[in-house]
Length: 150
Image 1 (cartoon, rainbow, N blue to C red):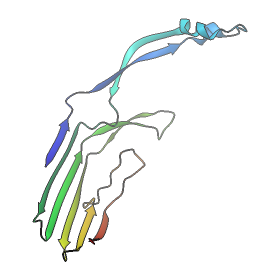
Image 2 (cartoon, rainbow, N blue to C red):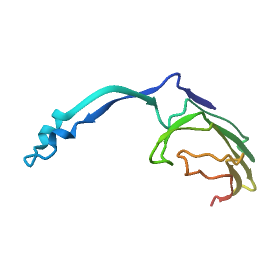
Image 3 (tube, rainbow, N blue to C red):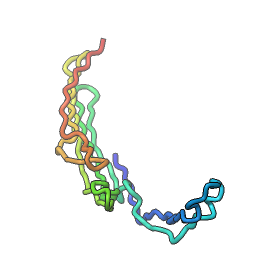
Image 4 (cartoon, one colour):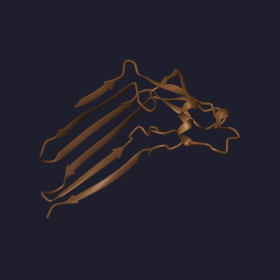
C-alpha cells in the first residue's frame, strides 16, 4: 500500500488593508458606517501556504497468514512546511519545519484459538517531530496487546 501527494507550486495571496483613522479623530458624532470610507486595499501580499507540506507519503507492507502470524511495517513521510514563528512577537517571521519520517511496526502471534498477542511499536525510529513548533508529538511507544476471544 502506498499513497502520496506533491504540491508543485502554492502561494497564498491576500490584500493589504489599511484604515485611515485620522478622519475619525476628535469626532463626537462618530458613525460606524463611515469607517468604510477610510478603508483602502493596497498591493497583494504573497506568502507561503502555511502548515501544508510540499510532499507527503505513506507506504506499508503487511503479512498475515490468517492462522498464526501477522507482521506489518508502515512509514509516513512529511516534507518541508512553513509556519509563522511567534517566538519573537515583535518580529514574527516564517520558519521552515524539517522533513520527517516515522515508522510503525506491528507483529502479532496467535497463541491459541482464543488468544492473540500483538506487539505495536509506534514511531520505531523515535523521530522527534511536531505538527506545530513547541508541541512535539510522542516519541517511540511500545504496546503489548493481549486479545481473548470468548
